[in-house]
Image (cartoon, rainbow, N blue to C red):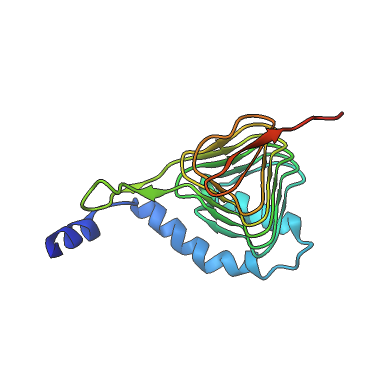
Length: 182
């Protein structure tokens, strides 16, 4: 058991360049977190400076927690609410006009539970355009949420969600289809 733990700790999970960027982001992240709420452009600038792909009109609240911003893509007119966690070990892509409400958690990484050393898995999350991820929801690794879908408050999504459906619960299940009005 002790040997497995030592082996796991010696595994190389990140390049030196990635480690350096993570340290720099950690030191500069207070410039993001302590910026006034209405400084939307400042936070977009900081994220772009660290390699994030950020569309026009994106609003990210200052207390959003972002791990590894260069793995983040936000389409135009996306809103990321207060206290959201974007755990971007792998790529997180959010389509235009999507809303991620307060306290939601998007987790693009996990560990191989079958392995004795629990190897890190950097997976991706895809959120389609015009999606609403409601308050306190959890979106797990390797999940895609289709265009126009709604993930109800406090839901745990561990499987893909189809377009224009409402899901909710733990684990999230189909509730109904949305009737879209123009």
